[in-house]
Each structure stands twice: as structure tokens, then as C-alpha cells.
Length: 393
Ligand code: MG
Image 1 (cartoon, helix red, strand yellow):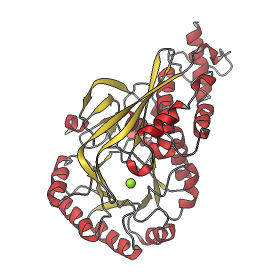
Image 2 (image 1 turned 60 degrees about the vertical axis):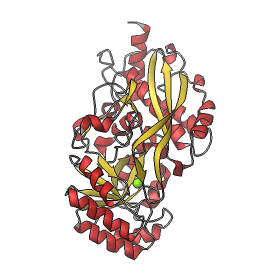
Image 3 (image 1 turned 45 degrees about the vertical axis):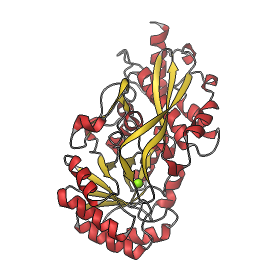
Image 4 (image 1 turned 90 degrees about the vertical axis):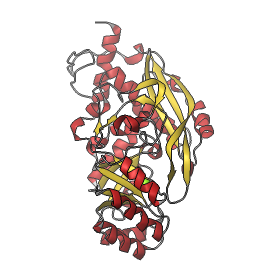
């Protein structure tokens, strides 16, 4: 058996810790001798900025924007390339400059193999505090690389059923009634719409009435911390419940946990944490204040921590959701690998841009996420940018 075959056998055994089929289809036994993993070459990290262009100006409770900065990463090992991405919406304090500066400090040459994921990502996390999106761009590329070396997609490595993916929400940002109606019509086939609220009382009701004028689909609400009074918020949630809303995301400021807990206790709808949540260690204190959590790779440093977060939330009997920023199909495909295990997916970031440069997870016209059997994250870099939404509606 060649060194490379031996290596793959060893690596698969190491990662999965069990008897599994190797990429070459050979069944491994736990008692079989394994080759050392130092046969594999060093990892090479490269990266470059990429500006994501939004299809429509995107309004949330605080701000409206037309583009989002991102940085694309590649980790190459023995001719196999894993792709990653950092996306930096302005409210999260990272920028192209800060991500590039962080990535300059990453030295993967000290590791013998990409399969040392826990050590590699622990090292990356300790380089400095924060920089979650920069860290996620390494985590995602490493997952893609390792999946490709094993020859399996991550949903399968994690033991998930790809048929159990939910339909992604499709987001309608805050806008004038006519524009909201147009955007809603554009999204007519999606199973669940996500509507941004929280600007002011008049705008909130107008947004819902505009959507309901053209669609009777279930609605998920994201208030983006916009409501300031708990009694007002609860009253509005009662009205939204009657309008066919299915959940409320982040009704009040992230620090107002007592007020949010008061709302959650009385709300007819589940209340989900987004801005109140960043990483794994935040979850225990949110139990009781919220019904569930929205996990985003760009806030939690990537797939490895997201996996741990979803498992912890489930163990605490909380609802789970996987969300995104404006992202290309690279980071969306990474988050989608986790989607068979969550209650809701809000993974439309690649549909909101006009210059996606990856093929990856596909979205059915009703929003159902379609994971492929391709290894890693199922990514293919495209030669020319595409407009994903135009492909499906
Ligand atoms: Mg949100």
C-alpha cells in the first residue's frame, strides 16, 4: 500500500476514532497498524480580500448598506485546497485590514498535519482575543481541506442525515412598503420569510402589513435589539403571533437579559438569542432568558465551535438555529453542513449578493438546503461571479 493510502487510513482513523471506510473504500480495523501522519506536506495559507455586492440595499434596525467586506482564505496541503471565508458586516468591528493583519500572524507550518484540528484551532484562537471572523476563515478552510483529504462531506463525518436540512429563511430588510412588497413577491416560493423589524412602531406594523398584502407564508421576525420597552415588545409579539409569525429574534438590547427573560416567559412565540450570543461560553447564562440560540460562524470562530454550541444548546433543551452574515456560498456551505441538526436555518447570505464566486450548497426554490455528497464543504471556486437567487427563482 502506498504511503499516501497509509496516511489516509491513519488520518481517517484519527479523526473519526472508529472503524470507518477510508477515501479509497478500504475498511479500517482498530487493531491495524497505522502510518505516522508526517508523510503529509506542510499546510500553506493564502488569502485575499473580496467585496460582496448586495442585490438590494439592506436595512436593519440601525443601518442600511450596499456591500460587505470579506476575505477569502485557502489552505493547501499536498495539492489539495480547502477554501474559507471571513465576512465583516460593519457592526461587528472587524474589517478587511484587521482580518488580513490577523491572518499574517497565523503560522500553520508548525503543525504536522491538518488533522490536528483541535490543536490548530486552539492555537489560532489564542493568537489574540476577538477576531472571530478571521478565525472562522481558518476554521472553514481547514474543515474543507480535512473533508477533502478524508473524501467525505462534513454532514456525513458528523453523522447527520442530509435529507433533514430545513428550508432556509429568506430575509426581507426594512424598506418602504412598495419595495417590501416587491422583495416579498421575489421570494414568493420560499417556505419561510424572515422580516427585519425594530426601527419604530409605525414601520414595524407597516412592514408586516406590506408582506401580508402579498404573502401568507410563515414569518420569522428579527428585531435586531430594536425594541426598547418590554411591555411594548410583548404586546407587539401578541399581534405578530396573530399575523402568522413563528419566532422572534433578539427583541431588545443584548444586555437587557432580565427584560428579555420577562418577555420570553410570557411570549406565545419562541424568543431566540442572536446579538446576546457570541461563543460557547455565553450559552449557559442565556438559558432561561431565551428559548433558543442563533449560531453564526462569523461570531463563534467557525464550524468546530458551532458544532459544540448546537450540542450544548440541545443538551440544555434550547431551540437551535444556524444563521449567517452576507456571505458567499463558501461560508454558507460550511454552516449548511450543520443544518440537519437545527430547528431553523437562516442561510440566505449567498442569495442576497450578486457576485458569488463559489458553487456549494444549493437552495431549492422553496428554500430547502440541498447538501451534496462532495467531500469537505462541497465547494468549487468559479471563474466568474454568479447571481445565486436568479438561478432559483
Ligand atoms: Mg439576527
